Length: 502
Image (cartoon, rainbow, N blue to C red; front, side):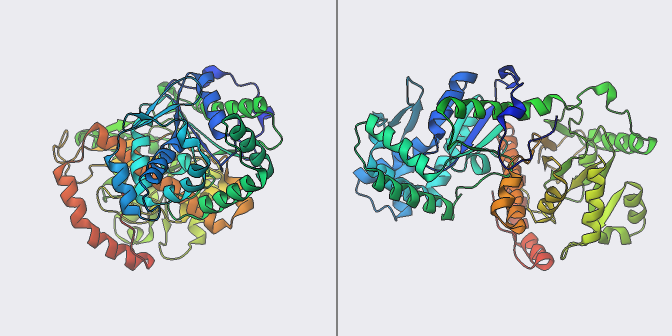
């Protein structure tokens, strides 16, 4: 079975999949423009799979309604942030649409009014408002077993979702659906006005600076323009099962983990594992190295100790890595890196030879370890992922496993109180939406979006690690001290400072 790499999801290809493939703690992310049927389908998926439906759009509608009632300036981000921060927003599962409560008051019906429709995109465009809502959504969703819909759920809110769907339809089809919805709710709005409103919302949602509407590179793209509601829901249900079905094919047999490895790899992995054990390294999400052949292992980078520590978590398949060419000029490091099948790469500009070699290894079924931020980053602040990852993905369609390493500073034998030493593996990312993006965007922009998704995955894995073991005072102080030093190094290497992200 292979990933769906076409530009449009094909239900017929996956019609043999059964609902029991979806794990109980699954997170389903549905994105798409206004009126595409996201809410209706999200509710249907929640009922079908026994998940909790979380209407993120309703959350933005609630703050919009409150702002309109307070006669707040919708362009005043500071006032809106203060309003959202002070409010008690609660979502409750119920019959039909989810119940939305603002400071204890049920606003479930009021937030669907036309005046809220017209203003919600402006309110949602403010980064401060979105930050508050996203944090709330992530807290709700990390419990698992949820369906979320919105405009940036797969790319921003839950970059590690079990299944991602980008549901869209023609403007004409969406206008007709919204017309029927409004009539059922007692809101009489003409089709011409709805056409203008939806077209304007499309423009605002796509052009806004904070988390614009976009296709996540790993999302299934489903055009429901010509579908009935039943066909739309069935297609989305099948899309939710694809990644679990592909995951089930990945070999997780511990007894086979060493098969096919030469003596060199068995020796190297054993040495790295002993090294990690000595320092008390803990692994999360890595069950005997469950990655398919020809996979990119993309890790954040904070210390020179990262490669051997990460090597202690490897179990199977030949592995190559991209390492800066300067290391190959230092004795005896050069000989060691060549023995370990590392590929030297020039970090300034595009190194055609290095990327061509890495692509050949991936296409031959070997795995590839890269640190796509390009250089080390301050502790606690994953950096911008550079274009190299996107170049490799577009050349090979290789799946990716995001990895977050923590604690390679402050090490202590058998574990440290200064900083927990961890390697956190995320789920396998498959590029279902890549061809759809390439039909719409330049390759450079597609590479940027692949990098943005990887960076979001790093931040989510870090957030999960901090939830498990809160960030220590040592980590906070070290990260703050490193920001200026690392920004200067990044500027020297790439000509611009790496943005401070969290």
